[in-house]
Image 1 (tube, rainbow, N blue to C red):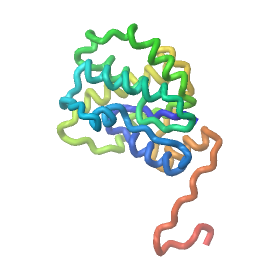
Image 2 (cartoon, rainbow, N blue to C red; image 1 turned 135 degrees about the vertical axis):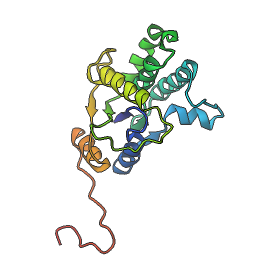
Image 3 (cartoon, rainbow, N blue to C red; image 1 turned 30 degrees about the vertical axis):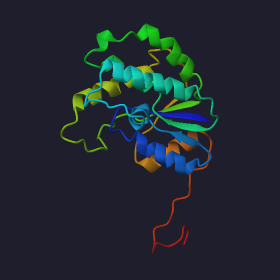
Image 4 (spheres, one colour; image 1 turned 60 degrees about the horizontal axis):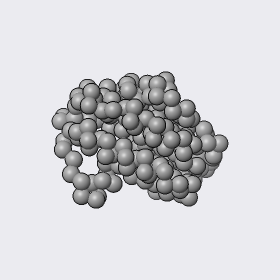
Length: 192
């Protein structure tokens, strides 16, 4: 099963990737393109440029085209398109040039799990984070993924709630049993 976790920054994506990796131990995990490129020495400014996001989009497409059968991806091309279409310099981005490749890469996925900003935000934002930009990216991703505005035609599952609730929703969607909660030290065993 090839699964991508999608959402704006500080929405709980990476936490969900970690939790799903624990529930699906046979799956590889692939970090988001931003971190993969940073590990290779690319230095991003505080607000990445259109070129920086295009570089991440290229890496995301490459990662999805790798062909591994059981993978959980932190982000997919839809995410990067959300950032590019919301960027203050969005007029410099040529969507038509990228869209066929993004569609082909996304077709390799079985499921995109969308982590939206919830009505009562679960993440405390650092004071320096641009909350308006984050909200605009979230709205653009809703249009791309839930309204299928770019014609990706992929199975999309929006999730909400605690990390455990989100994992349970994904596993239920995949028709897999939810993981048994690990008892905390000193607590009675389940059913006891």
